[in-house]
Image 1 (cartoon, rainbow, N blue to C red):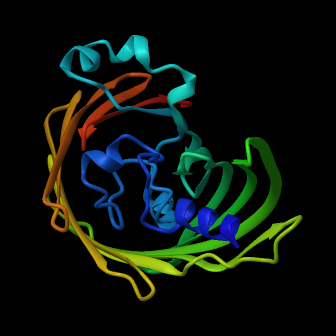
Image 2 (cartoon, rainbow, N blue to C red; image 1 turned 135 degrees about the vertical axis):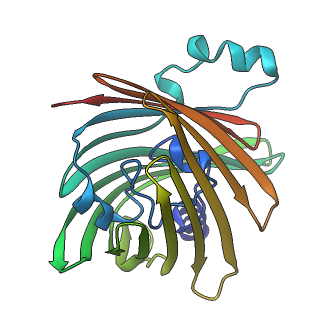
Length: 286
């Protein structure tokens, strides 16, 4: 059962693991349920109210100091890739590579990776109510290495899985209410292990837009039989080409923030949270 526990710990709902779909997500402290300012794959219903389409590449980098942060451009190569996505009004596609190495003891360690593919579809359901669905496919690779009586041993396994997520959005122009559920249906199938089911999780949030240049958001995210995570975000647009992102997580009392630079063919986002730098480049297809 060790493999099953490892897989769940990697892709459980609010364990973002420093692997966001978009750099704006950690910038606003994961306050995303009703935020429509970026391609929000956590709540697929927001794609119904997006009016742009494009592609994006996202990266994450854990620096060792401010000098490393200043050299981010030379450090963020494709080995730091966290997501590739395509988005448009009514839907999108994303890919995320997820992986982790876990050292259990001096003589035993586990290493695993998951390729996550997601298709989202959304549309207007009725009046100001929008709905969306996300379909995920997982390809799992797992290995464990141990030393017993001076002899090395390696066990390998692979698996395939899926999950279905849903989202909803109520749009009242100045106020937006969002809701999502992850893993309402799921299954992971292995060669040497029985089927596993991922944890059901969800969240809800509110975004207030008192002015075109200001958005305030508040989210509550949680897992079944797990603690609730409260986050808040603030987006300011003092200039047409500039957006400032700030966020705060109440549970761990952590601040985050960043900027978005807009230009004719797309935009560029860089944010900082918990000793990590996140970067997303979006390119418009219109």
